Amino acid sequence: MSEESGGQPKHGLRGPAPEERPHPEGRRNSHGVRIDPEVEAEPSNRTAVISALVENEPGVLSRVSGLFSRRQFNIESLTVGPTTVEGHARITLVVEETDAGIDQVEKQLKKLKPVIEVGELDDEAVRAELVVLKVRGDEPDKVHAITQMYEGQTLDAGPRTVTVQITGDQQKIDDAVDAFRQFGIIEIARTGQTALARGDTPTTPNEDPGHATDSTAGTDTETTQTTSTADDD
Image (cartoon, rainbow, N blue to C red):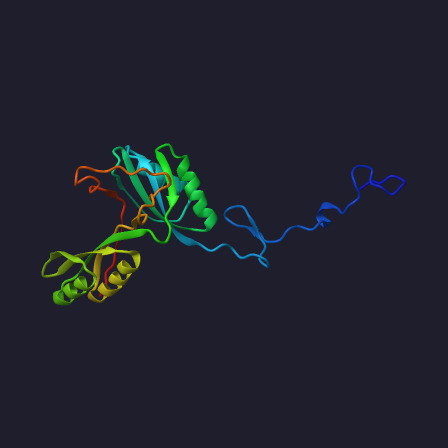
């Protein structure tokens, strides 16, 4: 750095050279926020159930799933089906992200053209999912007993396999799957959660539910399922 006779730098203010200046420590998290390891730990993930009211049109599911793929959000399950309002559908998403990530999920969903409204459900919401299990049929009486214990239904029974269906909240489904492992799970298909707000609270903000006159309205749903197979000896 060149200086004049008065001891001041020729250009700008006196100060340390760039390589001598202090640099911030720590790394940036996935949202661009610098984390000081001595002050703040990386935010922990939590599971959130998000309900999105959308226009029921072709391609809406692919647009939503494409958004999650591009943004690399951690999605656990996604279900979609019609509501009591003609032309509307409800998408229920279960995501595991930080609070900032969940906020981004909602913001990005709201930007999609078919999306009408988006909101996160609270812990009081009514939640349910379905699992279909195919197990070995060596002990059909015991399989039937476990099925009854979890208020399930036998869908198919043969000399080699038994297929059952269980519905309930996530904890009940997890417990049921663990109980059936003793028989040897051959195949499993699980829908993931769907949910509605409890009582008079709208499931998505500002939602104005219709009143279906057809008793079959809303019963046919399109559901993306996570299917896995396991061979238990």
